[in-house]
Image: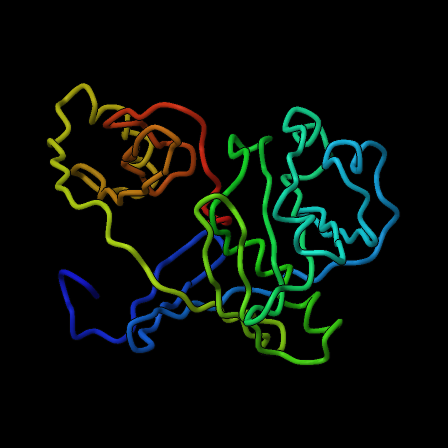
Length: 244
């Protein structure tokens, strides 16, 4: 939409969570995600100490804790103990408070257990924040600010059980990947696929991309589950596609 087909208005990515549609909206882009609703719970042991402040509410879903404060200055100035946060029994902790105008709410997201001490701007966090603030404020459209050191605005909307996120994108990387044909030895690893499909020749390959903290790893994948082998290596720990 920026380089290959600048006149395209929509593109659909096949993600682990299903089709992900991105639409152009002026100079911004709009994406739709499943809403991540949450329930109020008692604060888990050690959460307030890990954050360095006592939240007025705590909510929980299968992904994250949400700690609510009443003062956005508290959210902006938190200096959490990342080691303690990493041992909370969820992927991460979202902190939020009402926003200073023009923002409806302020937030930050800490996920050291996933190798991300603080994420600059987080779509997945806003999938939990949007239904929370919709219920609290009695409306469905918001302007949020994620108060990381970099900071970022996110336009949010609740549409039934979907969250609509809108924002600007920055083009930061362009390159080419060359993939060599498999030699006889490598191709032998796909014998199970040939036997499974009955194909007389090399099985068709599709490429999956696993984003890693220190690179990108490309996999050829056979029709048979479990036959993925790396062609080009990366390093570091995986970043779940569902959070991107």
